[in-house]
Length: 397
Image (cartoon, rainbow, N blue to C red; front, top):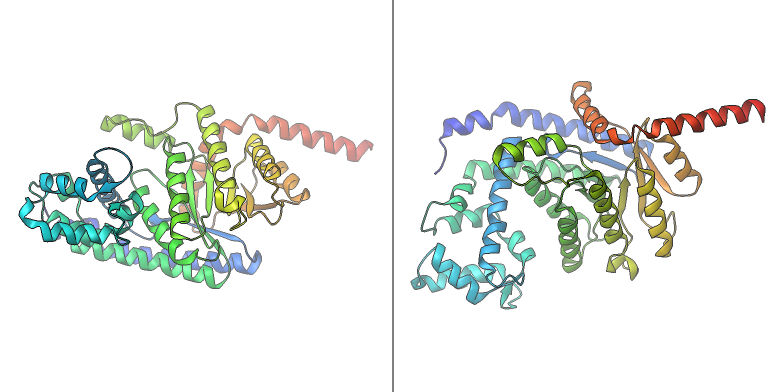
């Protein structure tokens, strides 16, 4: 059922939209600062600053229903939906078979190349909010799919959010700044992924302008990363990604527990480390890189020395040049300086990540980074030992 205008006004206020417009100005300043200080450098932005988080969660719910419907239509679970499968499930959920012309018309919307089947990429890229609302109009029951459909007001807010993001990407492209779009909570991520993929299709045709972010503490990280790489290969644009471990572990686990859902986070830190290195290897060894069609386009954002060593080994095994591979390393300013300096001295591209914005907005980010890297506090003793050794060397010789 459509929520009342009063409820919409409470959740999506003009004040919120005005704040989002103000956040765009802050991001624009950051992008210009990167251009002025580090040509061909990176800037990072958060989508939750460009649109109301309530809207992002609503849109993500709609997208999950879209994915779920594909899984239901894929009866034999081969990853493809044939016209027969589409028709059978359509008749079960939406209309009876007297609506054959509508079925044919909608199937062709997905099967643009007339292959006789729909793949997951065609499904998720075609089933946008307006088409979803059209399908919901044929639903026999007002179930979860119909209830997840965005209202026209919400669609307009999504368009405004897309416009803000597109403006930032266009500015970054004009200034030759690579734009990393941060990953966030899982209940926002489907909408964020949708936005990032739309920008990558538009701006990554010949270069690595827009970077996806993969949180490797999530159990589905490797699967999602592979889907994105496949999408880039099939649609012929350059895949680019930043890989991190993740920063919302406690919130994600608490939410899953309260809702009686499966914990989305890997059970152990070792599993997260393993996933991080597997995703890294998948990106470096992907077909388009090995055949020289594109660079790796990867930011290895980590303070973990083992992961850095793994990346270096993969580059060496693949015969990729240090400065020309398209792999960059990143650490927060003030953290793991010994890694940063060692990488730079040995000819690798390495960047220091500097939070930019109002201090009260940056503090939560810094707290999350401290929590994310709490397992690395043990390395402080190692760094102090190296400092003491260097001091002795300089004093004694």
